[in-house]
Amino acid sequence: MPKMKTRKCAAKRLKKTGTGKYRRNKAGARHIMTKKNAKRRRRLRQDGEVKATENSRIKASLPYGLK
Image (tube, rainbow, N blue to C red):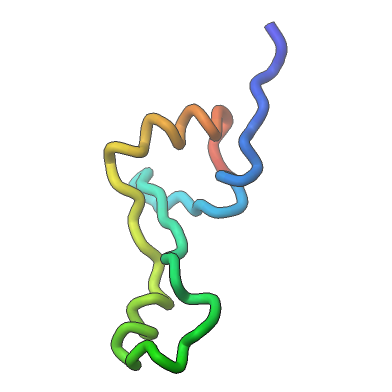
């Protein structure tokens, strides 16, 4: 059986925590920051946690895990 391929889009966007959860960047933090208030901009800088319902899809996308 051949090796499974890692989905590179998932590998570049996700980080794995020590407890096995996945972290992601939040959407909306790239441009047009002037109309967003300071509190919102600070929140967008933080990593977001991937929902538990998505974990099965992520594990399928990353068959050999992350570095």
